[in-house]
Image (cartoon, rainbow, N blue to C red; front, side, top):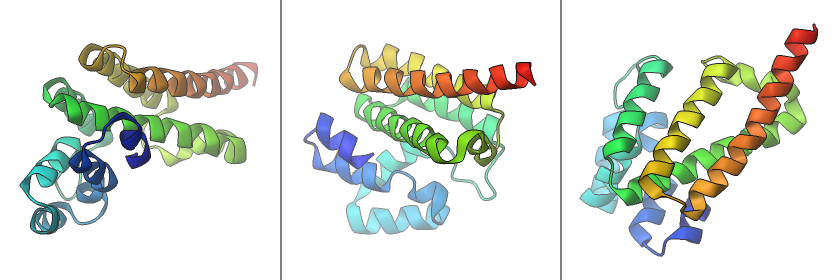
Amino acid sequence: VAALVIENSDDEDLVITALLHDVVEDAGGLATLERVRAEFGDKIAENILWLSDSTETPRPPKRERNLAYIQKMLEAPEEIVLISCCDKIANLRSMAADHLILGNAIWSAYSLSPEETVANYQNLLQIYRRRLNNHRVVLLLAQALTAVCEIYNQLKDEKTEG
């Protein structure tokens, strides 16, 4: 994610935010956020809050988190939307790469169905288009999503044939 941000911004705070964007969700919640605040300052901590789908422990169900995240991206500062888009590019590229090795087993890693997973990325793409217009990262996200949609369509075809 940070590499994609570096390609599209020279703002050091955005790069640091990109490096740390998942720490609240994946590494200790609000206590970790306070460590980030102490070490990197309020701006980066606030940026990370924008990018976190939940600060609650335990986390709410994925559907709820996705809806809340979509709402946040409608309201977030443009630079946060840029980082978010880079994050989703990285996620989709990983899905496509994992599919090369694992095949359709990749879908078992997600708490939502393949259809809901793809639909969430499609919804986010629409928001990124609205917020960032034809920025390079939006085009990269569309490209990555197309690859994952092809994988999803193959899955649907296999289910229909089977």
